[in-house]
Amino acid sequence: MNIIDAAAQSTSAGEISATTGIITAIILLITAVLGLWQVRRLRGQANDTNRRLTVIHDLVNHTLTESLQSDLEGTQLALGTMAEMVALHERDGAPARPETVAAMDTARAKISRLTLELAERMKVAKAIVSELGPDATEIPKER
Image 1 (cartoon, rainbow, N blue to C red):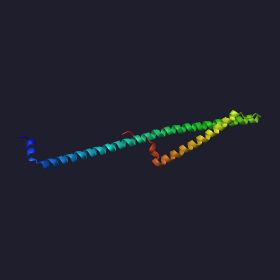
Image 2 (image 1 turned 180 degrees about the vertical axis):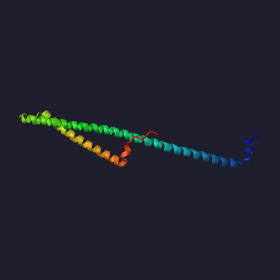
Image 3 (image 1 turned 90 degrees about the vertical axis):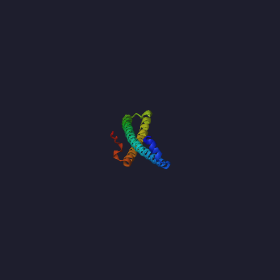
Image 4 (image 1 turned 30 degrees about the vertical axis):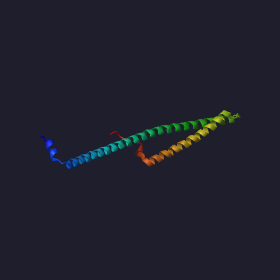
């Protein structure tokens, strides 16, 4: 007779059931701990991903804002040039061309639209920085 057979003969059904219950509880505890560890690991990865997406979003917004600002400045310059041209024509007694007047009106409308859009972007950017803090746009360091 080997050791397993001897243990089986000396162990009652109740002891086997209790031992099985303890083993099951240990397995469940290990599973729960591993699940909790996995959730924490995934949460950390999600936070890193969210920070990286925030940085990418900020970079894209920054580039778009610079483009809008450049467009605004170019349109203001063009409007100023057209206004000087109209003033020179009027000084010489020539009326302003209707196309130039229309282009000036379009430029004024564009300047108003861009000014409002840039002001809104600045307002949103300030709100984000005040909510998330100034370090919210830093790229997280690799681990």
